[in-house]
Image 1: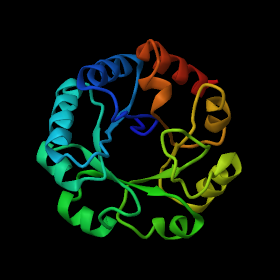
Image 2: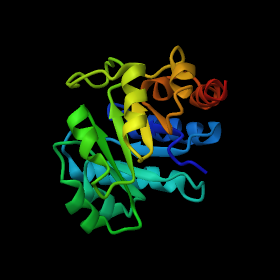
Image 3: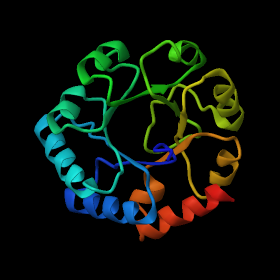
Image 4: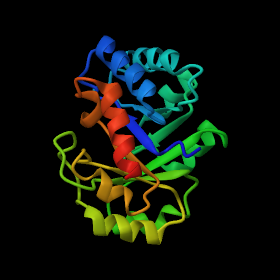
Length: 205
C-alpha cells in the first residue's frame, strides 16, 4: 500500500476536540497518512496533541508524521518526521530518528530538487503546487508542469501540497504523483469522512 496517497496535514488553529474528530472521520473515509503540524512553538502542547492523535490512529495502520520537530517525534514515538528547509538537516535528523522511521522533506525550488535524491529521506513534499491561504511565505508555485518536471527528476516518491482542492485533484492525479497532501479540503469540510471519500473517488477518476 502507498502510505503517501492521501495525506492529511492538520490545521494547528483547530482545538484538540475538533482536530481529533476530523482525524477520526478522515481515517474512516480512507486517509492514508496524518501529519500533525504545530507552528506556535509550545512544545508541551505539541506533544499533547501528537499523543492524542497517536491514540486515535492506534491500530488503523495510518502512520503519524510530526511536522518539523524531531524531538516531538521521538517523544511520542511517531512513525516519522516531515522537515522544512530551515529545520534540522536531513542527515542529522536521520541519525536521530534511526533508519526505521519515515523522513520527508519539503522541496521549494529546483536547486533543492536537484540534491534531494542524495539525502537520506523517504519522500519529498513538493511545495507549493498552487497558491494557498494556509502558507503565505511560499517561494514558488510549481503548478502542474512543475510537478511533472519534479516527477521526472527524482526517484523519490513525490507528495504534492499547496492549494489542492476538489477542482484540481483529477488533474494532479493524472500526472502519476505519489500522493496529495491536503489541509483545508478535509479539515474544514462539514463532513470530513465524506470529503475524504470524495477526494479518493476523484483520484481514481
